[in-house]
Amino acid sequence: MSCEEPTTSPTPENNITVVSSDGKEFLLDLKLTEQSETLARLISNFEYDRTDVKKDPVPLGNITSAQMQKIIEWLQHHRYYPKWEQNDIHYSTSFTFETWVEEYLNIPNNEMFELLNAANYLNIPRLFSTICRIMASRITGKSAEQIRTVLNIKTDVKNDVYTGIPIQEDSSSSEDGMSEISLSPSPPPI
Amino acid sequence: MDLFFWLSKLYEFIRIRFYRYPKFPLLNLPYVAMKQVIRSMSVSERIKLSQTSKRMRNYVILSRVVSEYCEVHIRDKYSFLYFSTLNAMFYCGRKLESSTNSEVLTNRDYGIWLNKKGTSLDNVTTIFQRTHLVLYPIKILGADIQTILSIPCFQKCDHISVYCGFTVTSEFLDAVMDFAKNSRCVTLERCSLSSEDINILLKHWITSEFNMFKMLKIEFEEDRKGGVVRFCREVLFEGITVLRAVLRQNPCYLIATNSQNQLKRDILVCQFHDQILKMITESNDKIRLVTGINGTPCREVHKVLKLLDKKKELEMNVLDEKSLQERHILHMQLETYGVCFKDNFAFLQ
Image (tube, rainbow over all chains, first blue to last red; front, top):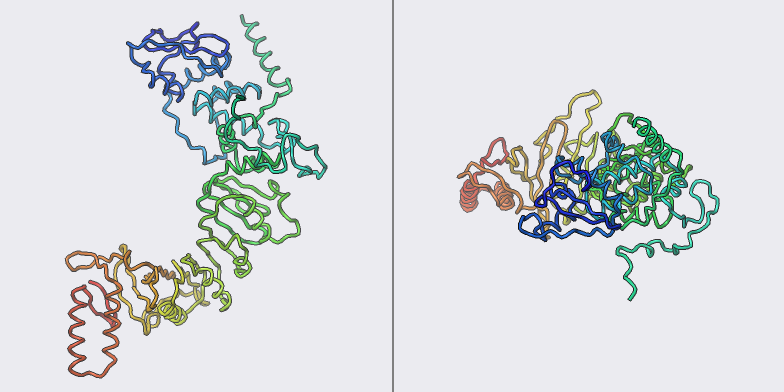
């Protein structure tokens, strides 16, 4: 919930202010921030949970106000949910989400991508895992070509695996695909 | 207000449904996030994804999950692989069981990997190699064992389960026992070996200079008249020094090796359950037998068995005063370990 429409009576003692990349301020209940590992750790490090500590606004440079609004909506909904336990390895054939989640994530792929990035940045495991699974379900039943279109993958395979027709090679990839993989972002220019 | 609400709903619907879906640039995600997205996919989705590009294939490989257990069932056109961690079954052709909680993949999902003219074994091997998973204990069911065991990727298996039927050739058993050499587990299903055959095997194990197997489980075939196979203790252990004891709450027979080498597994534990004979080899140090003597566990099984061996040797000699004295001393020593004798069998109290 944004600072404009608080549901609970906000007091400076149990709230912190976060600032999105476009400069908009949001007042967040400390209870909500427990769901985000990044914010929870920050609060614990700066001792913002203490009443006598002055709370400076937290800048979130990677998250826009639209994304922040969406994330606060998620945090509000899952306020009283038990702590998320990671069980990513075991795939279940019957993945179901509650109606609210389905409606909440009924958004175009590009918005989903931005939301996933924001969830990854704020480290909200429940939201992150849910988006991952929803995104995976969007490629279910699709052919390799359709998956390429949805996920914006440029092929570096010389012939299509199904038709055998030559495909235009991806200029950005080298002969050995492994060399393309970098586990850390490229260093900033000096 | 209502009109505005419905208009906004209609706008949302049009935006989602009719707007050409923008792309989700998966490769632009940070590596950890991308790995998570790939891991949340089912096996078939991952296979499809790996076919989109070489780069994507490498990411799929990097995001793979280690499977602790894999079963390879070779049953002609119904051959399949089962990975417990993924809870997925990979069929070479059509699926056999219709109701299963596992994710089932058939040749439709990875038809391009399979050779249409290839045998089931070729296809199983191809899928096995293609799945790119770490291969730990593997159970193989199949008839042509020599061919299966000659395939390099199957030589890493820890467990082999073989259906024998009525006809077991010596070459067949040689191949299985050769495989079992490095402390592996073998199960012979519906085996028709007799008590005499097992006796020969036990004698061979006693004189063997290497670790023959970790566990050999023989499930006996019912005889041709449908009767239950009965083990004859006297025939099974003829000419072998055995000690009857209770190990992990199960009655068992213990045999020690005569090997001069320091073998890792120098004690053989024999257990019977209905039509199943289980032979487990263990290190002497790891065997703890509970005895009635002060309730202390016996840790010197090897020593007790050697004493029993010596006793047997003395009994075969001519009775004179010296041997009588030695036999008396041996009896005293065995008694301290709680060894008793009944029906020509030594057992721990």
